[in-house]
Amino acid sequence: MGFLNKIIWFLILIFPAFPIAFFCAFFYIWCYCFEGCSNCCGPIAEFFLKCVRLPGTSVRGMFDGRSIC
Image 1 (spheres, rainbow, N blue to C red):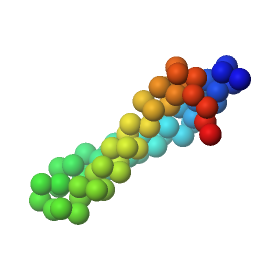
Image 2 (cartoon, rainbow, N blue to C red; image 1 turned 180 degrees about the vertical axis):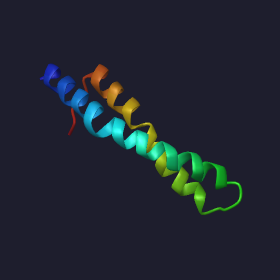
Image 3 (tube, rainbow, N blue to C red; image 1 turned 90 degrees about the vertical axis):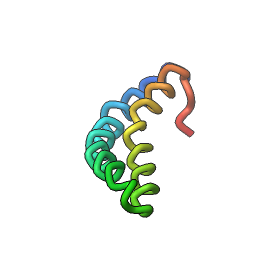
């Protein structure tokens, strides 16, 4: 079961995690720049930062052999 979990985490890493991170990185940079000017950009920037960190979460899940559920 551990090997199957690693394969699933790898597929999550390749297909949804990297495209989501690349897409959100652009918006994170812009929101982070405007965070000093406007208070509403802070939570939005935090959301995009979580999306940018998604590949790291997938890799940790893959190496730890964590279950998806």
